[in-house]
Image 1 (cartoon, one colour):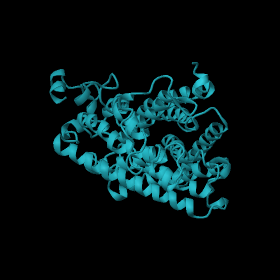
Image 2 (tube, rainbow, N blue to C red):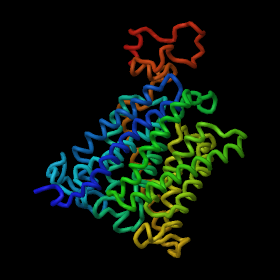
Image 3 (spheres, rainbow, N blue to C red):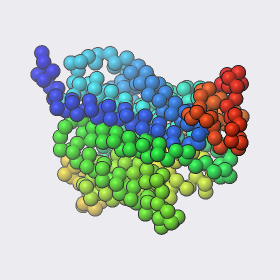
Image 4 (cartoon, helix red, strand yellow):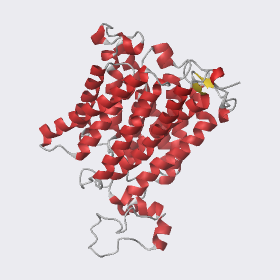
Length: 436
Protein backbone atom coordinates (compact mmCIF):
# COMPACT_ATOMS: atom_id res chain seq x y z
CA UNK A 1 0.00 0.00 0.00
CA UNK A 2 1.42 3.42 -0.92
CA UNK A 3 1.83 6.20 1.64
CA UNK A 4 -0.63 8.34 -0.33
CA UNK A 5 -3.30 5.66 0.01
CA UNK A 6 -2.76 5.59 3.76
CA UNK A 7 -3.66 9.25 4.16
CA UNK A 8 -0.20 10.81 4.10
CA UNK A 9 -0.19 14.09 2.18
CA UNK A 10 3.16 14.59 0.47
CA UNK A 11 2.90 18.39 0.45
CA UNK A 12 2.13 18.55 4.18
CA UNK A 13 4.91 16.06 4.87
CA UNK A 14 7.46 17.99 2.83
CA UNK A 15 6.62 21.22 4.65
CA UNK A 16 6.80 19.60 8.09
CA UNK A 17 10.15 17.99 7.25
CA UNK A 18 11.49 21.45 6.42
CA UNK A 19 9.85 23.00 9.49
CA UNK A 20 11.37 20.36 11.76
CA UNK A 21 14.85 21.14 10.43
CA UNK A 22 14.18 24.86 10.95
CA UNK A 23 13.17 24.37 14.58
CA UNK A 24 16.20 22.20 15.30
CA UNK A 25 18.39 24.97 13.86
CA UNK A 26 16.98 27.30 16.51
CA UNK A 27 18.99 25.58 19.25
CA UNK A 28 22.39 26.24 17.59
CA UNK A 29 21.04 29.74 16.92
CA UNK A 30 20.23 30.09 20.59
CA UNK A 31 23.73 28.87 21.45
CA UNK A 32 25.23 31.70 19.40
CA UNK A 33 22.74 34.23 20.79
CA UNK A 34 23.57 33.26 24.37
CA UNK A 35 27.27 32.72 23.62
CA UNK A 36 27.67 36.26 22.36
CA UNK A 37 25.90 37.68 25.41
CA UNK A 38 28.24 36.20 28.02
CA UNK A 39 31.80 37.21 28.80
CA UNK A 40 34.75 35.63 26.97
CA UNK A 41 35.56 33.27 29.83
CA UNK A 42 32.30 31.28 29.51
CA UNK A 43 31.48 31.33 25.79
CA UNK A 44 32.12 27.65 25.13
CA UNK A 45 30.30 26.57 28.27
CA UNK A 46 27.26 28.49 27.09
CA UNK A 47 27.42 26.88 23.66
CA UNK A 48 27.81 23.45 25.24
CA UNK A 49 24.76 23.85 27.48
CA UNK A 50 22.60 24.31 24.39
CA UNK A 51 24.25 21.65 22.25
CA UNK A 52 24.20 18.97 24.93
CA UNK A 53 20.50 19.63 25.43
CA UNK A 54 19.90 18.33 21.91
CA UNK A 55 21.35 14.95 22.83
CA UNK A 56 19.88 14.67 26.32
CA UNK A 57 16.32 15.65 25.44
CA UNK A 58 16.33 13.45 22.33
CA UNK A 59 17.15 10.34 24.36
CA UNK A 60 14.49 11.12 26.96
CA UNK A 61 11.88 11.97 24.32
CA UNK A 62 12.39 8.77 22.38
CA UNK A 63 12.44 6.63 25.52
CA UNK A 64 9.27 7.94 27.17
CA UNK A 65 8.69 11.66 26.61
CA UNK A 66 6.73 11.48 23.38
CA UNK A 67 4.44 8.73 24.63
CA UNK A 68 3.70 10.54 27.91
CA UNK A 69 3.08 13.86 26.14
CA UNK A 70 1.06 12.66 23.15
CA UNK A 71 -0.16 9.24 24.21
CA UNK A 72 -3.80 8.70 25.18
CA UNK A 73 -4.70 10.47 28.40
CA UNK A 74 -4.60 8.30 31.50
CA UNK A 75 -5.13 10.62 34.45
CA UNK A 76 -7.70 13.40 34.13
CA UNK A 77 -5.95 15.40 31.44
CA UNK A 78 -2.62 15.43 33.26
CA UNK A 79 -0.42 12.88 31.47
CA UNK A 80 -0.45 10.36 28.64
CA UNK A 81 0.37 6.66 28.70
CA UNK A 82 3.49 4.65 27.88
CA UNK A 83 2.02 2.78 24.94
CA UNK A 84 4.63 4.25 22.60
CA UNK A 85 7.62 4.16 24.98
CA UNK A 86 10.72 3.64 22.93
CA UNK A 87 8.63 4.73 19.93
CA UNK A 88 7.10 1.25 19.85
CA UNK A 89 4.25 0.75 17.41
CA UNK A 90 5.18 3.81 15.35
CA UNK A 91 6.42 2.54 12.01
CA UNK A 92 6.69 4.43 8.71
CA UNK A 93 3.04 3.63 7.94
CA UNK A 94 1.72 5.25 11.15
CA UNK A 95 -0.13 8.50 10.42
CA UNK A 96 -0.86 11.61 12.50
CA UNK A 97 -3.38 13.70 10.60
CA UNK A 98 -1.85 13.92 7.13
CA UNK A 99 1.81 13.38 8.09
CA UNK A 100 3.80 10.38 9.34
CA UNK A 101 3.59 10.01 13.10
CA UNK A 102 7.37 9.66 13.30
CA UNK A 103 7.71 13.08 11.66
CA UNK A 104 5.17 14.63 14.03
CA UNK A 105 7.06 13.13 16.99
CA UNK A 106 10.35 14.53 15.69
CA UNK A 107 8.81 17.96 15.12
CA UNK A 108 7.57 18.01 18.71
CA UNK A 109 10.97 16.82 19.92
CA UNK A 110 12.63 19.95 18.53
CA UNK A 111 10.29 22.05 20.68
CA UNK A 112 11.28 20.13 23.81
CA UNK A 113 14.97 20.57 22.98
CA UNK A 114 14.96 24.34 22.67
CA UNK A 115 12.76 24.77 25.74
CA UNK A 116 15.35 23.03 27.90
CA UNK A 117 18.19 24.98 26.26
CA UNK A 118 16.43 28.29 26.90
CA UNK A 119 16.66 27.77 30.66
CA UNK A 120 20.46 27.79 30.54
CA UNK A 121 20.47 31.53 29.89
CA UNK A 122 19.13 32.22 33.37
CA UNK A 123 22.08 30.50 35.06
CA UNK A 124 24.89 31.42 32.66
CA UNK A 125 28.43 31.79 34.04
CA UNK A 126 27.87 29.87 37.29
CA UNK A 127 26.34 26.38 36.88
CA UNK A 128 28.21 23.09 37.13
CA UNK A 129 28.12 21.37 33.77
CA UNK A 130 27.69 17.98 35.42
CA UNK A 131 24.66 19.24 37.31
CA UNK A 132 23.19 20.54 34.04
CA UNK A 133 23.59 17.09 32.51
CA UNK A 134 21.47 15.67 35.32
CA UNK A 135 18.95 18.50 35.36
CA UNK A 136 17.97 18.50 31.68
CA UNK A 137 16.54 14.96 31.35
CA UNK A 138 14.82 15.09 34.75
CA UNK A 139 13.30 18.47 33.97
CA UNK A 140 12.17 17.36 30.52
CA UNK A 141 10.24 14.42 31.98
CA UNK A 142 8.79 16.14 35.03
CA UNK A 143 8.04 19.61 33.66
CA UNK A 144 8.00 19.86 29.87
CA UNK A 145 6.31 16.55 29.10
CA UNK A 146 3.30 17.04 31.42
CA UNK A 147 2.73 20.64 30.26
CA UNK A 148 2.96 19.57 26.61
CA UNK A 149 0.26 16.98 27.32
CA UNK A 150 -1.95 19.56 29.05
CA UNK A 151 -1.78 21.92 26.09
CA UNK A 152 -1.44 19.70 23.01
CA UNK A 153 -1.94 16.08 24.02
CA UNK A 154 -5.18 14.14 23.53
CA UNK A 155 -7.42 14.87 26.50
CA UNK A 156 -5.06 17.49 27.95
CA UNK A 157 -6.92 19.66 30.43
CA UNK A 158 -5.76 23.09 29.17
CA UNK A 159 -7.18 22.59 25.69
CA UNK A 160 -9.95 20.03 26.12
CA UNK A 161 -11.32 20.99 29.52
CA UNK A 162 -10.37 24.64 30.08
CA UNK A 163 -10.53 25.69 26.42
CA UNK A 164 -7.45 27.94 26.47
CA UNK A 165 -5.68 28.40 23.12
CA UNK A 166 -1.97 28.07 22.36
CA UNK A 167 -1.02 27.57 18.73
CA UNK A 168 2.74 27.03 18.87
CA UNK A 169 4.02 26.99 22.45
CA UNK A 170 3.49 30.08 24.59
CA UNK A 171 2.67 27.83 27.54
CA UNK A 172 4.88 24.72 27.10
CA UNK A 173 7.88 26.59 25.68
CA UNK A 174 7.98 30.27 26.64
CA UNK A 175 6.23 30.44 30.02
CA UNK A 176 7.62 27.08 31.13
CA UNK A 177 11.22 28.01 30.27
CA UNK A 178 10.87 31.47 31.80
CA UNK A 179 9.35 30.27 35.07
CA UNK A 180 11.89 27.43 35.26
CA UNK A 181 14.74 29.84 34.58
CA UNK A 182 13.58 32.06 37.44
CA UNK A 183 13.43 29.07 39.78
CA UNK A 184 16.97 27.94 38.92
CA UNK A 185 18.32 31.48 39.18
CA UNK A 186 16.99 31.61 42.74
CA UNK A 187 18.45 28.19 43.57
CA UNK A 188 21.93 29.12 42.35
CA UNK A 189 21.97 32.72 43.52
CA UNK A 190 23.55 35.69 41.71
CA UNK A 191 26.84 35.67 39.82
CA UNK A 192 29.97 36.97 41.50
CA UNK A 193 29.93 40.73 41.04
CA UNK A 194 26.22 40.94 40.18
CA UNK A 195 25.12 44.62 40.22
CA UNK A 196 28.76 45.62 40.79
CA UNK A 197 30.85 44.48 37.84
CA UNK A 198 30.17 45.21 34.18
CA UNK A 199 28.88 42.04 32.52
CA UNK A 200 28.46 43.21 28.95
CA UNK A 201 28.05 40.91 25.93
CA UNK A 202 31.49 40.09 24.57
CA UNK A 203 30.47 39.62 20.91
CA UNK A 204 27.48 41.52 19.58
CA UNK A 205 27.87 40.27 15.98
CA UNK A 206 27.49 36.74 17.38
CA UNK A 207 24.34 37.84 19.22
CA UNK A 208 22.82 39.26 16.04
CA UNK A 209 23.75 36.14 14.07
CA UNK A 210 22.11 33.99 16.72
CA UNK A 211 19.00 36.17 16.70
CA UNK A 212 18.85 35.91 12.91
CA UNK A 213 19.02 32.12 13.04
CA UNK A 214 16.33 32.09 15.73
CA UNK A 215 14.08 34.30 13.59
CA UNK A 216 14.67 32.05 10.56
CA UNK A 217 13.89 28.94 12.55
CA UNK A 218 10.83 30.53 14.13
CA UNK A 219 8.99 30.28 10.83
CA UNK A 220 9.22 26.52 11.17
CA UNK A 221 8.27 26.79 14.83
CA UNK A 222 5.06 28.74 14.22
CA UNK A 223 4.00 28.03 10.65
CA UNK A 224 5.00 24.40 11.04
CA UNK A 225 2.52 24.09 13.91
CA UNK A 226 -0.28 24.17 11.32
CA UNK A 227 1.00 20.65 10.49
CA UNK A 228 0.26 21.27 6.84
CA UNK A 229 1.12 23.35 3.80
CA UNK A 230 -2.04 25.43 3.94
CA UNK A 231 -3.53 28.88 4.49
CA UNK A 232 -3.22 28.69 8.27
CA UNK A 233 0.50 28.05 7.92
CA UNK A 234 0.79 31.06 5.61
CA UNK A 235 -1.08 33.29 8.05
CA UNK A 236 1.07 32.11 10.98
CA UNK A 237 4.19 32.71 8.87
CA UNK A 238 3.22 36.31 8.10
CA UNK A 239 2.11 36.98 11.68
CA UNK A 240 5.50 35.73 12.88
CA UNK A 241 7.38 38.08 10.58
CA UNK A 242 5.18 41.04 11.50
CA UNK A 243 5.44 40.56 15.27
CA UNK A 244 9.21 40.16 15.12
CA UNK A 245 9.44 43.49 13.30
CA UNK A 246 7.21 45.44 15.68
CA UNK A 247 8.94 43.85 18.67
CA UNK A 248 12.28 45.10 17.36
CA UNK A 249 10.94 48.59 16.70
CA UNK A 250 9.17 48.78 20.07
CA UNK A 251 12.33 47.89 21.98
CA UNK A 252 14.41 50.42 20.03
CA UNK A 253 11.81 53.12 20.67
CA UNK A 254 12.03 52.55 24.40
CA UNK A 255 15.83 52.58 24.33
CA UNK A 256 15.92 55.81 22.35
CA UNK A 257 13.43 57.49 24.65
CA UNK A 258 14.89 56.13 27.89
CA UNK A 259 18.62 55.98 27.17
CA UNK A 260 19.12 58.12 24.08
CA UNK A 261 20.72 55.25 22.15
CA UNK A 262 19.09 52.46 20.12
CA UNK A 263 21.42 49.48 20.54
CA UNK A 264 22.31 46.38 18.56
CA UNK A 265 21.56 44.20 21.58
CA UNK A 266 18.21 45.93 21.89
CA UNK A 267 17.33 45.23 18.26
CA UNK A 268 18.14 41.53 18.65
CA UNK A 269 16.33 41.28 21.97
CA UNK A 270 13.28 43.16 20.69
CA UNK A 271 12.92 40.88 17.69
CA UNK A 272 13.10 37.82 19.96
CA UNK A 273 10.55 39.35 22.35
CA UNK A 274 8.10 39.89 19.50
CA UNK A 275 8.65 36.35 18.25
CA UNK A 276 8.13 34.94 21.73
CA UNK A 277 4.81 36.75 22.14
CA UNK A 278 3.42 35.77 18.75
CA UNK A 279 4.25 32.09 19.31
CA UNK A 280 1.02 31.23 21.17
CA UNK A 281 -1.13 33.64 19.18
CA UNK A 282 0.10 33.36 15.58
CA UNK A 283 -2.73 30.97 14.71
CA UNK A 284 -5.42 32.95 16.52
CA UNK A 285 -5.01 36.64 15.66
CA UNK A 286 -5.23 38.72 12.50
CA UNK A 287 -2.27 40.56 10.99
CA UNK A 288 -3.29 43.70 12.90
CA UNK A 289 -3.39 41.70 16.11
CA UNK A 290 0.06 40.28 15.38
CA UNK A 291 1.49 43.77 14.91
CA UNK A 292 0.06 44.86 18.27
CA UNK A 293 1.20 41.69 20.07
CA UNK A 294 4.76 42.15 18.84
CA UNK A 295 4.83 45.85 19.70
CA UNK A 296 3.46 45.23 23.19
CA UNK A 297 6.13 42.61 23.82
CA UNK A 298 8.94 44.80 22.53
CA UNK A 299 7.94 47.68 24.79
CA UNK A 300 7.09 45.74 27.95
CA UNK A 301 10.00 43.29 27.77
CA UNK A 302 12.48 46.15 27.31
CA UNK A 303 11.47 47.31 30.78
CA UNK A 304 11.06 43.81 32.24
CA UNK A 305 14.72 42.88 31.73
CA UNK A 306 15.60 45.49 34.33
CA UNK A 307 13.38 44.00 37.03
CA UNK A 308 16.15 41.64 38.13
CA UNK A 309 18.18 44.54 39.47
CA UNK A 310 15.25 45.83 41.51
CA UNK A 311 14.06 42.44 42.74
CA UNK A 312 17.59 41.04 43.22
CA UNK A 313 17.40 37.85 41.18
CA UNK A 314 20.18 37.22 38.67
CA UNK A 315 18.60 36.05 35.44
CA UNK A 316 21.87 36.26 33.53
CA UNK A 317 20.60 36.51 29.95
CA UNK A 318 17.03 37.71 30.57
CA UNK A 319 15.09 34.49 30.14
CA UNK A 320 12.50 35.83 32.57
CA UNK A 321 12.31 39.30 31.10
CA UNK A 322 11.92 38.10 27.51
CA UNK A 323 10.51 34.57 27.49
CA UNK A 324 8.34 34.53 30.60
CA UNK A 325 7.02 38.08 30.19
CA UNK A 326 6.73 37.81 26.40
CA UNK A 327 5.00 34.44 26.68
CA UNK A 328 2.49 35.83 29.17
CA UNK A 329 1.75 38.80 26.92
CA UNK A 330 1.20 36.68 23.82
CA UNK A 331 -0.90 34.07 25.62
CA UNK A 332 -3.15 36.61 27.33
CA UNK A 333 -3.66 38.75 24.23
CA UNK A 334 -5.29 35.80 22.49
CA UNK A 335 -8.24 36.61 24.73
CA UNK A 336 -8.24 40.15 23.34
CA UNK A 337 -7.38 39.79 19.64
CA UNK A 338 -8.53 36.29 18.62
CA UNK A 339 -10.62 36.26 15.43
CA UNK A 340 -12.92 33.46 14.31
CA UNK A 341 -11.37 33.39 10.84
CA UNK A 342 -8.21 32.04 12.47
CA UNK A 343 -9.58 30.04 15.40
CA UNK A 344 -12.61 28.54 13.70
CA UNK A 345 -15.03 30.13 16.16
CA UNK A 346 -13.39 31.60 19.27
CA UNK A 347 -13.30 35.41 19.38
CA UNK A 348 -11.42 37.77 21.65
CA UNK A 349 -12.68 40.71 23.67
CA UNK A 350 -12.24 43.27 20.89
CA UNK A 351 -14.18 41.13 18.43
CA UNK A 352 -17.28 40.51 20.50
CA UNK A 353 -16.12 37.49 22.48
CA UNK A 354 -16.36 39.09 25.91
CA UNK A 355 -14.05 38.29 28.80
CA UNK A 356 -14.53 34.52 28.79
CA UNK A 357 -11.54 33.61 26.61
CA UNK A 358 -9.29 36.09 28.38
CA UNK A 359 -10.18 34.41 31.67
CA UNK A 360 -9.32 30.98 30.28
CA UNK A 361 -5.96 32.23 29.03
CA UNK A 362 -5.21 33.73 32.45
CA UNK A 363 -5.97 30.48 34.27
CA UNK A 364 -3.67 28.58 31.91
CA UNK A 365 -0.85 31.10 32.36
CA UNK A 366 -1.03 30.97 36.16
CA UNK A 367 -1.32 27.18 36.33
CA UNK A 368 1.54 26.44 33.92
CA UNK A 369 3.81 29.13 35.35
CA UNK A 370 3.26 28.00 38.94
CA UNK A 371 3.74 24.32 38.10
CA UNK A 372 6.95 24.93 36.16
CA UNK A 373 8.39 27.19 38.85
CA UNK A 374 7.62 24.92 41.80
CA UNK A 375 8.72 21.64 40.22
CA UNK A 376 11.89 23.18 38.77
CA UNK A 377 12.75 24.75 42.11
CA UNK A 378 12.38 21.34 43.74
CA UNK A 379 14.54 19.61 41.10
CA UNK A 380 17.19 22.31 41.39
CA UNK A 381 17.28 22.14 45.18
CA UNK A 382 17.58 18.34 45.13
CA UNK A 383 20.46 18.39 42.64
CA UNK A 384 22.14 21.16 44.60
CA UNK A 385 21.90 19.12 47.80
CA UNK A 386 23.14 15.87 46.25
CA UNK A 387 25.97 17.10 43.99
CA UNK A 388 26.00 20.88 44.09
CA UNK A 389 24.57 22.98 41.26
CA UNK A 390 26.68 26.10 41.67
CA UNK A 391 30.21 26.10 40.25
CA UNK A 392 33.09 26.64 42.66
CA UNK A 393 33.95 30.28 43.24
CA UNK A 394 37.44 29.84 41.80
CA UNK A 395 36.04 28.17 38.67
CA UNK A 396 33.47 30.93 38.22
CA UNK A 397 36.11 33.61 38.59
CA UNK A 398 38.54 31.95 36.19
CA UNK A 399 35.82 31.04 33.71
CA UNK A 400 34.03 27.78 33.03
CA UNK A 401 35.57 27.36 29.58
CA UNK A 402 39.00 26.65 31.05
CA UNK A 403 38.07 24.97 34.29
CA UNK A 404 35.38 22.65 32.88
CA UNK A 405 36.17 22.17 29.20
CA UNK A 406 39.93 22.91 29.16
CA UNK A 407 39.42 25.18 26.15
CA UNK A 408 39.14 28.84 25.26
CA UNK A 409 37.00 30.41 22.57
CA UNK A 410 39.82 32.62 21.29
CA UNK A 411 43.53 32.09 20.69
CA UNK A 412 44.50 34.89 23.05
CA UNK A 413 42.89 33.13 26.00
CA UNK A 414 40.48 34.67 28.43
CA UNK A 415 40.07 38.42 28.53
CA UNK A 416 38.67 40.58 31.25
CA UNK A 417 40.67 39.35 34.25
CA UNK A 418 43.11 42.22 34.43
CA UNK A 419 46.07 40.27 33.01
CA UNK A 420 48.61 42.58 31.36
CA UNK A 421 49.03 42.42 27.61
CA UNK A 422 51.42 39.63 26.72
CA UNK A 423 50.97 37.83 30.03
CA UNK A 424 49.71 34.29 29.84
CA UNK A 425 46.11 33.97 30.99
CA UNK A 426 45.94 30.24 30.27
CA UNK A 427 46.73 27.99 33.25
CA UNK A 428 48.90 24.96 32.79
CA UNK A 429 47.36 21.79 31.40
CA UNK A 430 47.90 20.09 34.76
CA UNK A 431 46.04 22.82 36.63
CA UNK A 432 43.18 22.81 34.11
CA UNK A 433 42.89 19.04 34.44
CA UNK A 434 42.73 19.22 38.21
CA UNK A 435 40.12 21.99 38.14
CA UNK A 436 37.92 20.16 35.65
